[in-house]
Amino acid sequence: MIVMKFGGTSVENGAAIDRACSIVGERISRRPFVVVSALGGATNGLLQAGELASRRELDQALAIADTLETRHTELLPSTASEFARLRELLRALSAIGEFSARTQDLIASYGEALSSLIFTEKLRQHGYQAAHVDARQCIVTDDNFSKAAPVPDETAARLERLARPHIEAGRIVVMGGYIGSTAAGVTTTLGRGGSDYSAAIVGAAMNAEEIQIWTDVDGMLTADPRVFSGAWKVKEMSFAEASELAYFGAKVLHPMTVLPAVEKKIPVYILNSKRPAGTGTRITAEPRPCRNLIKSIACKRGITAVTVSSSRMLMAHGFLRALFEVFDRHRTPVDMIATSEVSVSLTLDNTSRLDEIVEDLRALGEVKVDRNMSLICLVGNNLKYTPGIAYRAFGSMRDINILMISHGASNINFSFTVDDKDANAAIEKLHSDFFREFDAEVFEPV
Ligand code: ASP
Ligand code: MG
Image 1 (spheres, rainbow, N blue to C red):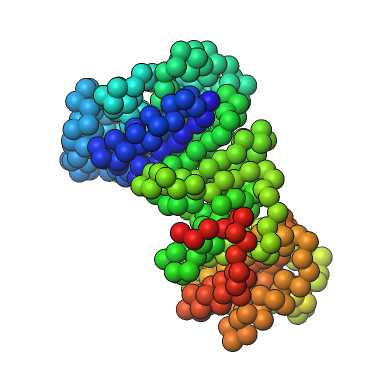
Image 2: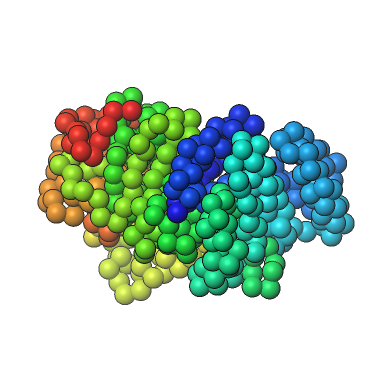
């Protein structure tokens, strides 16, 4: 049995869904369990409608519902009844004037609830035997709305009961991703982008042979192809490498995906639904050895670096604690940290509270803010065993100014920040140095 997950762009319209159905049909002998995202953009639309309704802009909210209804009923007319219910909900929201996390999950759940019904029907139209299972009956979670965590044993038991018999009978099972419910039956979601997570939860619970994430890229690449045209595809990488890359902005795989699959050593494939003949990227617990030092160069743009300098206080007892308390108080996560004798530099992704943070930090020392920075990250298992990575990396970029450096605790990443305007040149130079030759076992041209 395999899990095949199709993301929003792979089910965005009738043509995409037909393509996805053929991809599933070609793999029928492997007994597919399909997990689908909402139609591309539907989750955003639903949440926006809920937001507008709760701000008492009901007309605009209902207009979004109309647009979504047209999109869905064109694919499956019977979904109209669900939209009647959605409108009732939106009206209730505008009467109450609030949009709690619990209600957000309920509204957002329409996306996957509908896409999974549509996908099931399309498979039948293609002539396959397909069974729909409701994620809200299978994926049991806690009640941490908008970011619920699965309860693995209960989920596994439900899947065995509700989905396994269909698989045994040779039917393709289809379930919406992203959504679940509490033991008491209240709808929850696993967090944005959570369909990958659903796929991993199902794969782990049902001991799948593999999990296939069908998306709109060929797999993990050695660099962002929009920045660098000479990037190659990585045929195989470790879970640790993939999650490192996901964190650094390679928006191919939800990092949480890796967790349930890693534990059970189930391989995850990233595959392109627009080019299904490709071999994608295989992500496993222990990939084959690689002759290149790194697998990929990731980059996160628009990073802000904050540096606090204080010759007097830095080494004093309690200084770092006071410093981190500031970020904690303003609920702002810190990405990367570098310290020197007299200063501490930190990078932030989220700068919505920057002014308040800077004001509080002034009590600790002199504060400098560098906006428009890029965080560049070299990722590869081999970095664990290779000394001198900094020397080599910086040798490739002699004329580029580097602000902060960090060799991640996982030992498989080496990151540093440069000015945004230097990022492309840095990536190009690093790529031509670290990928002068490619290990043909591990990389392939795109
Ligand atoms: N539809 C959800 C979202 O847009 C979940 C997913 O697509 O993975 O966040
Ligand atoms: Mg996604």
